[in-house]
Length: 461
Image (cartoon, rainbow, N blue to C red; front, side, top):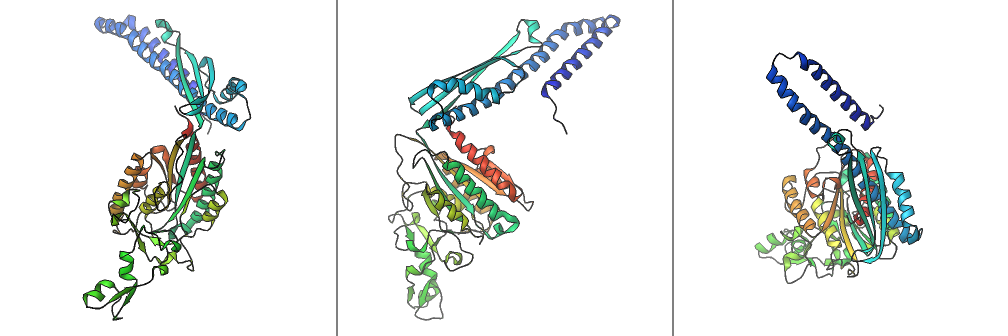
C-alpha cells in the first residue's frame, strides 16, 4: 500500500472547506429565516478563521518538529566527526549544513537557516550548539495579515567529559532455551558491546558489566572468604549433625545434638535476595549491619561441574573481548527472579563492596544505565513464589534506582503470546525505554535501539 502525502490531506481539507462555504453562500440569498441568515453571516468569518489558523499552525508545528529531529542528529554526527578528527572547527558550519540538508525534508518550510557554534570548554565539556529557524507560508492567516508563521529551535551536543557505565542484566532461566531466544540474546548483547565500545575514545570512557541471573546470581565460589557474605542460612542447611538422622541445624539443635556446618569452601558461589528492605537498594554491605550482607545459597546450578551452569557476574570492564566471552558462555537454567538481576546490576555500578567500581573522576560527567532482558514472569525469589509479590518488591527497587539517576531499559522477549509485563513497563525510565519483543529475531533490533538511545544521552537539549 502506498504512503499518503500529508500535504495532499491539507489540500483535500482546503477544497472540502471551500466547497462547503460555496454551497452555504449559494443558499444564503434564498433563506426564508432572516435571523438565521444574519447569524450565519456573522459567525461564518470567525469560524473559518479558527479552522484556517488551526491548519496553518499544524503545518508550522510539523515543520518545527522535523527541524528538531534533524538538528539533534546533525549535532551528534558533528560531535563524532570533530572528536574523531575528521573535520576541523573551521569546517563545522559547512558540514552542519550538509548533514542538515540531507535530513530535513519538510516541504512546507521556507527561509530555513541553521548556524553551528563550537565551544571548546564549557561546564558540559566540548559542545556544539546548532540553532535553526524557518517559516511556513500561511494559507488562511494571511487574510488576517499574517502571511508567515516563523519558528526556531536548537540542539546541543556535548562530549569530552561525558562518560558512561552500563550494567546489562540478562535472563539465563530455563525458558530461554526455547524459540532461539538464548542465541538471539547473545548476539544482541555482543552487538551492543560493539556499538557502545565505539563511543569510547579513551580507556574508561565506557564501562560495561554483565549480570546473568535466574532465581539467584553467581559471584563465584572463590569469594567464600569475603566479609560481605551472610552464612547464617547456608550454615543451617549445609552441615552434619552428631545424630545423622537430622539434616538441618534447627532439628539437630532442638533435639539436643551438635550441628557442624560444612567448610565454606564447599559453597557453589550463588546468592539469594538480601534481607528486606536492602533487597531494594544498593547499600554497601557491612558486618556492623548483618541485614546488609548477601545471603549465600547452595544453588545447584552454580556448581562449575554442572551442566547447565549459571555464569558468574562480570564487574564493570572495558575488556570488550572478555565481556563477549562471558555472554557466549551463558546457558539457560532455573526459575525467574528479575529483581535479583536488577539489584546486582545496580550493585556493579556502586563504588563499595562487593564490586568496588572504579572511582568517578570529578572532571567528567557520568551517565549510569541498567538494561534488563527477560522472557518470563517472576516465579521465585527468597520469600515468594507469587509473581505479584515479587513484582511489588521489584517496583520499589526500580523507584530507588531511578531516584539515584539510573536510566533503566527493559526488554520483554515474548514469543509465547503472554501479556505485556506491567512491572517491566513500570521499571523502564519512560515508554520509549520499554521494548516488547515478540520473536527472537527482533532482539538485535531492540538492543540496537537501546545503543542509539544511550548515545543520544549526549544530546544536552
